[in-house]
Image (cartoon, rainbow, N blue to C red; front, side, top):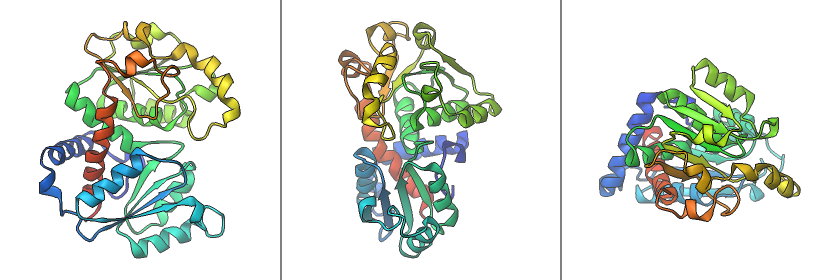
Length: 302
């Protein structure tokens, strides 16, 4: 594991090993409190963050390391004054590992190719591997094994793409329930890759068909960072029928879990009674970001 750019950088065994390590870290945090002593993590944010920034910062501090948080408003790179290849080479001379959160996936890949230190994808337009690896930890804690995961709403986003890849690697059936319009459908490249992996994937507009016999129901915001505010009313009108609510959960297995990577807007992508109900594990997902970030850092930083 040189970098973490995509879920596809890992195989099933490697993901299970990360889950196993994260579970041990969660159970025995003192055992790992000095594992990254004097190591330096640079976190670069070109997009807003709460959970990603706090979980990585806390992970490093609790393992004895140091963090440099760097935001785009002060960066010559983000202002077009310095090439991303030069920035990667500079950062490599100062730090031990870098986590980047930015929209342009190809720019992120370019950084990784020019970096001499491990690079972690903290979110791009294409994938959100740290979130989905953390989600796998939560799934194993709650369900041990699942056969079907159903995702509802806008599916042209990083969370959906990483979920598709995860399900492909684990042989989990995934149902994507979204409008039959290109702007809401998973990226074509992701679908082609999923096809090569022989993923058991269903893309449908039928809510019952998607939710039926699901172990996990998952949704995300209808207004991700890349969406202009001017699109809000139009998107809400189109996506309203894909809200995860009482009707949707009635089709799932009785012991299903509800997942959301947050931030959530109650009354839009999910009803309040579902996200705050007994099947919701959204704040367990939040906590597990910390334990999985620690596992990722330990696997990458030698």
